[in-house]
Amino acid sequence: MRILLSNDDGVHSPGLKALYDGLEGLGELHVVAPDRDHSGASNALTLNRPLTVEDHAGGFQSVDGTPTDCVHLAVNGLFDQPFDRVVSGINTHANLGDDIIYSGTVAAATEGRHLGLPAIAVSLVNEGHFHYETAARVIRVLLEGTAPMTLGPRCILNVNVPDVSWDELAGFRVTRLGHRGRAEGAVPMTCPRGKARYWIGAAGKGSDAGEGTDFQAVRDHFVSITPVHVDMTRHEALPSLQDWVERLNHGVQDEGSL
Image (cartoon, rainbow, N blue to C red; front, top):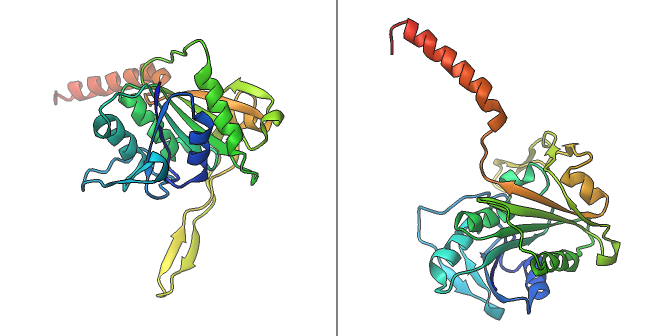
C-alpha cells in the first residue's frame, strides 16, 4: 500500500512526524506538505505562479504552496507510481463542525478524493496534552481494518481524536457534523509603524453540539468519525426552490419577456 501523507500545519509539524512514525511498516509512505503553516487555507490552489519543491530529512518533501497544492502535485506530477490513499494530518487542533469549511487539513484530503483516492483527514482536539501518538494509532487501526470501507464518490472521513492517552479513549463513534456559534470579534492591534492591524477572532463555541455530533463524541472521549462529501447542494430545498422559480418563470412569461 502506497500512502501519501500531507497536512496544513507544515512539513516540520510534530503531528505530521507522529503520523509518519505511527504508520511506519504499514506501507510505503511519502510525505508532501506545505513549507509553512497554512491553517485556514481551505481548498485554495495556487494558479498565479510556479511552485517549488524541496527535499528534507527522512524523505519528506515540502511545497511553497497550499495543502491542496501539495496533494495535487504529489498525485499528478511528483511520483511515477500511483498512490492507494491519502491521509492528511495530524492537525494540531480540532476540525469539528463548521471548521471543515476553512480547514487546510480537510482540503488536502478532499483533493486526494477529487483525484480518485480514498482519503482521511485526522485532527487532535488539542487540550494542551499533545497526545499525537493516540491520533496516529487511531489512523493505523482504521487503515489496518480487514474489511475495506466504501464511502462512494467524493467522500472522505473526517476524524477527530480527543487529546487523551490511548487507554483513556472510550472507543469509536460515527457522527454528524455539529455547528459552531458566531466567531468572536476581530482583535485590533497596532503595528510598529502605527498602522491598524487585526487578528481574526477565535472560532465560536458549539451551538449544535449535542448527541450524535462530532463535538459530543469528543467530549465523551470517543474518536469522532464523520463521512464528509463535497456536494454542497441542499437537496431537500430543491423542490420548494423549483416551485418558486417556476412561479418566477410564469410571471416573466406573462409580461412577455420570454
